[in-house]
Amino acid sequence: MTNDLSRRLHEHKNGLLEGFSKKYALKRLVYYESYATPGEAIQAEKRMKHWSRAWKVRRILQMNPEWNDLYETIN
Image (cartoon, rainbow, N blue to C red; front, side, top):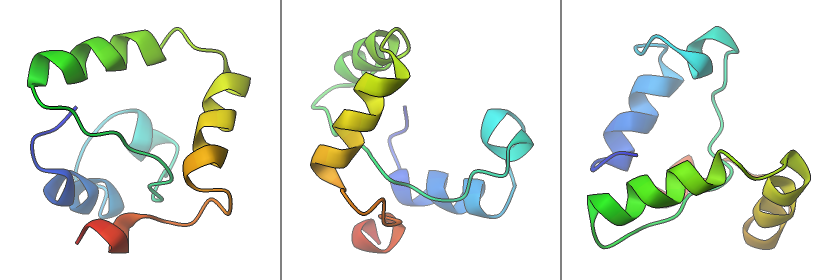
């Protein structure tokens, strides 16, 4: 969850943040959702953590069937 997706993506792409994405060298944004309030975003993130990988993949394929890096589309 972030209030500045451009900044957050820059941090991830340049390895500026410790954690899961840096550990596994994740550099591509293939899916995102927007919410009106931080509370809604946090609740959605908590729900997503319980989804199966197959469900997450289907969700990505609906939004981004080619798994393109969406970074350029938000900057």
